Amino acid sequence: MPSPSRLLLFVALVVMLLAAPLSPFAEEAAGPTTWYAQTLTRGDAGLNVTHFWSKGSKLRAETVVAGHKIVTIVSGSTYYAYDGLSGEGIAIRRDASSIALDRADRRPFGNEYERLLALGAELVREEELMGRATGVFRLTGDFGKRELWATLDDHHLPLRMEIYKRASTQRTTTDYLNWQSGLAIDDNFFEPDARAVLESMDYATYATRTATEGPVGPVPVLYNTLLSIKH
Image (cartoon, rainbow, N blue to C red; front, side, top):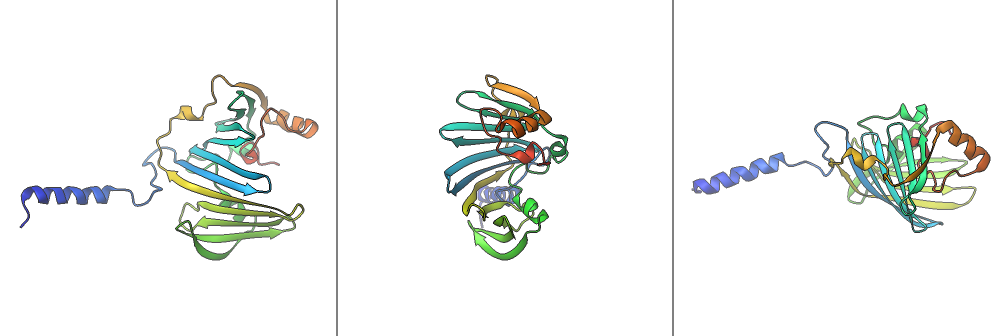
């Protein structure tokens, strides 16, 4: 018969196991959902690595382009994009069409599953990728072909996206790595560096200048749908 001390230790271990999260994607009991993922994109233009963090509808993304860290922050009504080295960038007031889609329980990135299905993508097969059961969804048209590997759970996490552009014959593959949820992230993380020099404008001004001048600002605007869904 086990001693009382060993019995108490066994009970404590059982309680700990029952209280442990059932998956690596455990979410907060209350408050906005938080997510992190890293993407690795490869194609004709080379290799690109991006880190994404989100808290509810807030987003922070960091990617390196030609040795410069491009920081993109979407928080509330403002879209920020600036060079992490020079501190120069732009602050654009988001269009109401994009703000209307903000939700505390919806990721502002990694929503390829919803977007492709809305465009008519179909499930073509199921297979395992990165140790997870996924559905492979395909969308084809005059533009070319897009294929998405997304998890079959309620999160529909994208694990891989392959794009073929028929006109240019370019192929691009993006892998989503190291998905994490339930992170403790302070709201200040979704604010631009106080030293950044940002040119401010509303979306209408940005759209007009882009149409007449070409790219506006010292850094590219990488996630257009978070700025406006009209284009």
